[in-house]
Image (cartoon, rainbow, N blue to C red; front, side, top):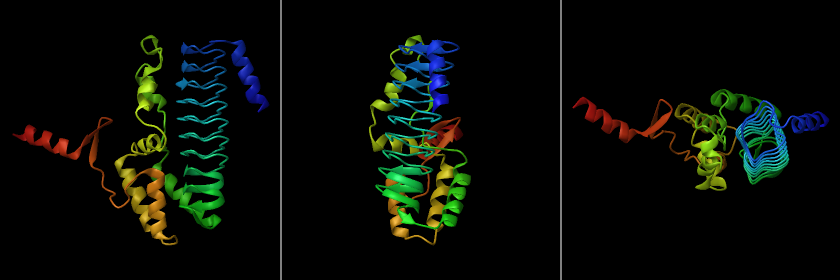
Length: 262
């Protein structure tokens, strides 16, 4: 914490040093695309977030450290893809979950340690889908999920998208890109929207793996998974295809192919 405070102080001394596209922000150091955010260091694509360090794609989040794609989350440390979750430490993909440690993909949870895919749970350790498991089972489960997702997380704010769209340059000085991204969705809908960016092949693998778990109550597992991700687990098929990063419905692709072969 002392190191973080020192770095913040250094940033205040070096106002705007090695920083680009700064809008209404003070004490910014080596940070690009910053809007209404003071005391920001090594943080890119940050909007209305103060005291942010090494955190990209951060919105309405104060005192955030090494946390990426974070929205409305204060006092967050090494927690990525986090929405409205305060005092969170090394917990990724969490929504409205406070005081969680080494926990992933939790919704409306508090005081969790080494838990994953949990919903409205208060106090717990070594739990998945709101069910208690052994430490060994949790280790294997988290390793398997990690292999399936291969680094993917449900980022609420995608800094790379902002960067590609000239985030916070003169023509976007009012933050309209980010406002457009978040204005139509609030609360859990925004979190579910982030889950919809999961590539089709990973989604299928994830759902099939969860269906194959034999040491959990299957009905409760599927219900909690759907509440956490918004996915309809009864249907692991994707109804779209991706072409050069853009998504098209399968019906649209079929119709285009019919026109092409005429």
